[in-house]
Image (cartoon, rainbow, N blue to C red; front, side):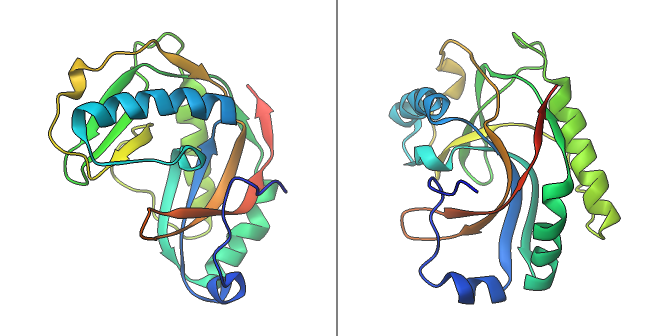
Length: 196
């Protein structure tokens, strides 16, 4: 399992016994991440805040939050048997979540290339999770890649870049650990991907 781009915490064994903050996400290739970082730098010039590290750029499919070790272990065993269909998704606009002060890049529903597979994957993943006892969030799925955290005021609508159309390199279950320089991520399990 490739884990070079996700850091392991200093005491991984102790970390595996404690509750973990986990999520499922889609990761771009290093080349695509470099292109997304151009968007992040442009947004940072307008909004300030903390720019995401390239190895942390991802599109979250399901955020499960603080999860007891036993439940994490169940997911680690199950997830490699959940095949996922993926395709291309276009990042074509900047946006902002005002409460958490996040600036993001995301698709437009009238995008250069529709991503119906993304909605289907989100739904399929949550159907599986519900079968294991998790509760699907009531909020609508808003696919995005976070670029900045703790962003200041700035007109993100003024930002324009050519769309980035990309196909995820991997779909993974990840543990997130907060740190002074931002969160570090550790891959726990990888879901088998099948092109749509």
